Image (cartoon, rainbow, N blue to C red; front, side, top):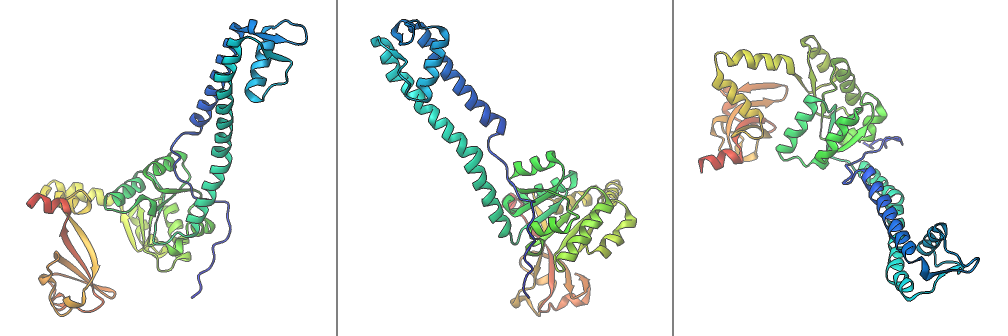
Length: 347
């Protein structure tokens, strides 16, 4: 099947700039003014070493004029240094300042014209080549925590694309190294801009259930096979999110309530659940396809971890059910495995 080429759009990815724009401009302006002031002061002190061919008098305005002309050009000859001290100053100080001015002007032109054009072109190229990335729609509390956890689990920040309309949220995502897009994730062209069809997964945490469901519906329309995890806060909207195309629906409110209620009588069990969910825990849940050499063996015989569930087509079976006594090709195994931190603790 031929992939549809994304429509051209003005929405372009961006990444964090190492130095703020105001600082890049400010230090250049301050340096230019400082060098000018230094040269003017010295020329004013040494004004007796200057000669004005027009009237023979060197005023402060003449000093400013001579300094500006000397630094920006080679001069017009109407005011010239005549003393050895002034000539030496012009040769050893003003000439290097002139070179610095040229370098500053060239550097500024590079930073604000050439480099920015280059960066924009480079980001456009990256955008066109996005593949196997993770798209995060919404970088609020839940979305940002999801990105932090992805990075903690080993996902490179450069493989994460964050879509949001909040400048503060986008700055936080940029600070992590993620590519960001200031756009509306409910629009087709926005998701096409981040090549949703080539993504490996999507997280939807738009902040409100109606927005999250609409983003999910749009993404599913553009990427029929994309795994989509959607956050909702109202239990009534869980079914709607699944109908919109969410592969996984997380009700953050009810999940937090379940954990809080469980902690009153089973604090250790809740602690273990948190351990499983966090990249910093000693164990984690791992999902993988069954290996050829494991076919015919039981789930309990796995050497890689503690098998807890088998997905076979549209059905799933717990470790206690007879269907897990003989693994089959195509099965998906969910197992509990130790993290590197857990292995180090027992070493």
